[in-house]
Image 1 (cartoon, rainbow, N blue to C red):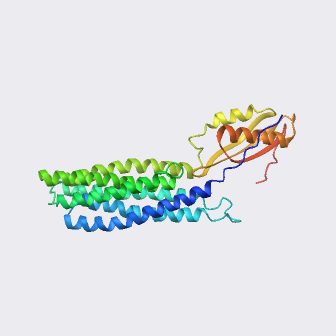
Image 2 (cartoon, one colour):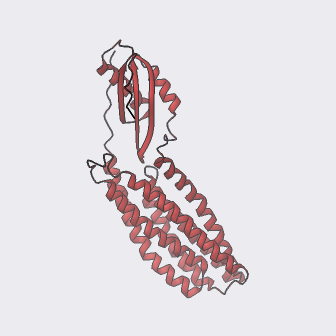
Image 3 (spheres, one colour):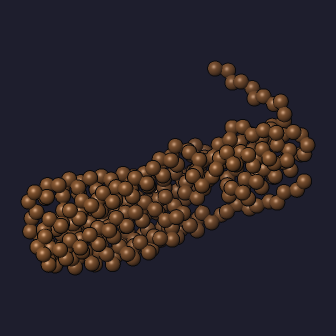
Length: 302
């Protein structure tokens, strides 16, 4: 029996380079407009604008962290760090998610204090500054869109920019209500609502990051189905010590022990098993130990 060989996907470096460029461009935009929103928020006395500037500040920090994480992840593996620095991107995503929650809680707290006595806000100035922020954020979303489905790190940065986009829209709405109706309370209400929406988005990012760090199987891979496919491979009696986990976004790994019935050479059986894993489940990083029937691993003395 023969099995077809499949090559490994080496597109990781090109994805990394493209993501770094996306993040750097978005970082430059965020820094520039963060300064404009802080000045505008102080001049107009708008919490919504300052809230958006706060999100923008967290964007600047998170984007810088994301760029740093990609740079670290590209460093070669060493004798003590055999997996390299790939997990740096997952750690950056985790920190970004936590930062979103902290900033949102701070804004909700500030909004709560403004509910009882909403201060006067210059709605016109607030609205036009928010319009400029919306344009910048929409451009940032477009830049990061191509990488958000392939990297948790980039998705974390994209969520930060999305939160700022929503914040800009909210500030525009609040500015219109203040300018046309004098509803100063719209400023803290909209700030609080947008912050709560950001927390919901951040929670998904946090849970996905923790999922990877806990070495859980990727949601896209049905482990019982994978085990059944391995057992059904001709020459395989049993599969045990099966582990599937994610090293970093887009890099899934699997290891297992295969008990052979001895009907075919180990080299051929190994190729057949690898073919099943790569072709049906798209896992390229595979470690397989083939054992003869009746093999027992020696017990390590305590």
